[in-house]
Each structure stands twice: as structure tokens, then as C-alpha cells.
Image (cartoon, rainbow, N blue to C red; front, side, top):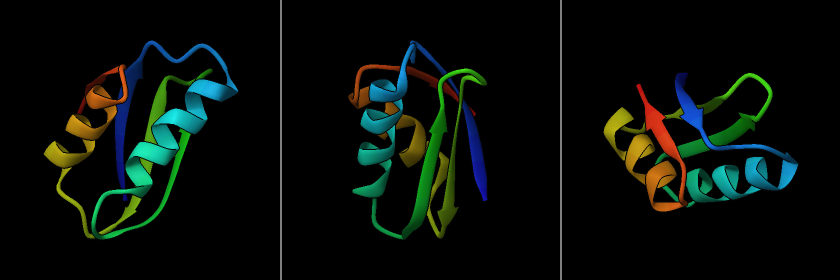
Length: 64
């Protein structure tokens, strides 16, 4: 499991955007985001740099 900090999420719509972006990565079995905690979690065989890049491409700031 990989968890990263995400800045810029303010609602469940933001969570959906992040989750959708992560779900498109190869090797992701499941993904979730929590705007209140400011985190996103991915399960599966995926590189943390790819997770950060996908979140940033979706318009949010992410740090591992």
C-alpha cells in the first residue's frame, strides 16, 4: 500500500478526480482519496513517483 499527502482537495469531487487519475495507472488494484485527511492511498504494484505524477497531472500537489 502506498499513501501520499495531497494538497488542494476540498470536496468529494476532488477525491473522485484523484481516485480516477490513480485508477488509470498500470498495476493499481484499488485507489482512494480523503480530502479531510489530505491523503490518497493506492494498493497494487505501482511506483510512488507515478502516483505523485498522476495526482499532479490531475491538478493537485502531492508529496510522498
